[in-house]
Length: 223
Length: 115
Ligand SMILES: Nc1nc2c(ncn2[C@@H]2O[C@H](COP(=O)(O)OP(=O)(O)OP(=O)(O)O)[C@@H](O)[C@H]2O)c(=O)[nH]1
Ligand SMILES: [Mg+2]
Ligand SMILES: [Zn+2]
Image (tube, rainbow over all chains, first blue to last red):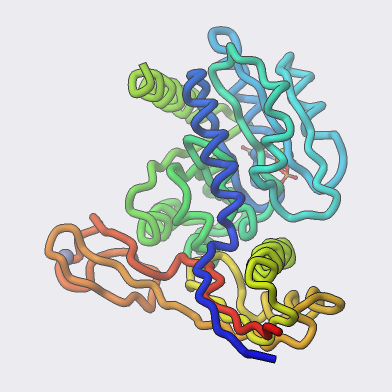
């Protein structure tokens, strides 16, 4: 019996990264902007999508992939808005991965403008899995507290957009919005910051406008 | 707790490599895990011990090297190892940075028994 040491140097997330890269390429070629929404449970991802659909759906084609551990509830909420939605029930897994998105790929209409992916509510694990999105958005809601970015840095470091949600609750809870912004920008100075409320509609138009600009940019760069 | 699915990926890579090398056993496995890899080393160890039973690596020893966050400033070229999570240059405070180390999650090497 011989003992032998071998160098490997392989990324444990290599296969996920490869599938995600393929998805991003195919969607981008079709001119579809994919947006991955991350947050802890209940930060308001589905509510935000419901509000965004009011602004975007009259002029743009959008669809939503809903990731949850169990139930079809979030997909049903989106369908009630007249928007096409698929539910991925992970059956226990705490995150979506690129393979799960890949399986749905053939069902995604080619004339879409926006493909939103609502990840499983979890501020830790989903951050490690590229889904082939063009934009990653992390929501931080007012009830969660303004100190979260440094406690859960990976979600913020890997995101392009920080959405401070439930701003209608500002003043009712001890949440310092400037501190939340600063904490977020400390860990990731490149993030764009938005403030939204699904209750009073604050910031929804501005965020939609930004997504539309990103879509135009994507199409310019793939023209 | 996504460490279990990471370890499942690890075993796929390990078994494929062991087969290529015609190995009978895997006796040692070394991972490099960055502080910003999103994986917790202790949870990886637990998941590894659960997973290895009844595999070619059932006796394998796992070593994890933790890699700190290292950045290079694009303005002044300074390299800084960051212990806090304020991502700016240690010298000039610029936020225009390049990530050198600290996000990796690699199988670096293995020791095999070959007949
Ligand atoms: N005050 C206030 N409440 C909100 C807002 N947005 C959502 N909520 C409430 O927060 C709760 C969770 O909202 P969801 O939209 O289901 O949150 P989610 O992030 O999709 O939740 P999961 O998918 O379970 O992770 C619900 O009770 C919403 O009514 C908001 O802007 N302001
Ligand atoms: Mg939801
Ligand atoms: Zn510098």
